[in-house]
Image (cartoon, rainbow, N blue to C red; front, side, top):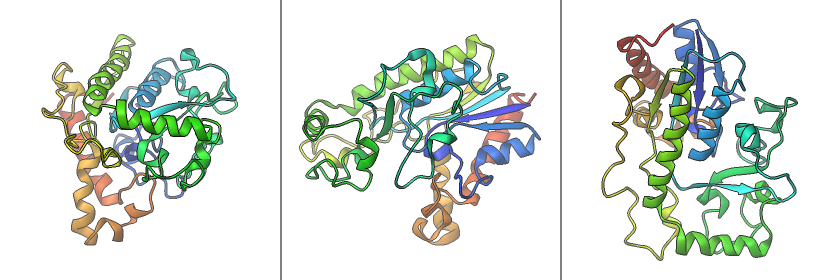
Length: 288
């Protein structure tokens, strides 16, 4: 059996502390091969690229099961100015892996490194792009080196105005749901089973940056529904819902190991979610 994991930081391996994440725990339970291409700061469009990459043989022989955690809609893709045009045929190999400051990922950790990896875009959340402060200039934010090839000082200011005046989280939820569903449909067409967890999809992180729209709520008026997916493909409980255990075990999340892990969660949380996924796999006979 071969298990693959796709998603953002919630689903990724921490390269400094590997093998505690839920994907590893699940693969150990089934004594299966394990591939994880989850990446910190990934957008939902990036996760869709991960799924295309898996379906097109980017991780070798197709997996027997893909575990997918969606991310928030308040993330974006930025074109790297010095690079070639985005190439849809390369899917995940378009996405730059080097996270520079903060997370531990570098280019050599990309699945396609030295095998066609040629990033054309960078993906990240708006809070990180704007340094959690809309008054900062390009270069003032802690992570701004990530975007040195994506912005000029002028284009950075224009992008802020776009976010403030044109970005709408509710519209993005609609569009990004269709993007994810499209990539999951491709997996189905290739005979690749998957479990999809909406995870933090409804959560509108970074909307605090937009003080103009005080009426804009963090969550949608109505939760996004995924009932168009067959029951064996859908697990509403995502890895982020296991966060509560960090406070139960350590008192606060800040006192837990999750505070310094790329995937945000101590092993107790990963164990909790792994058990939910294993139960779902066994109930629907998804183990090969």
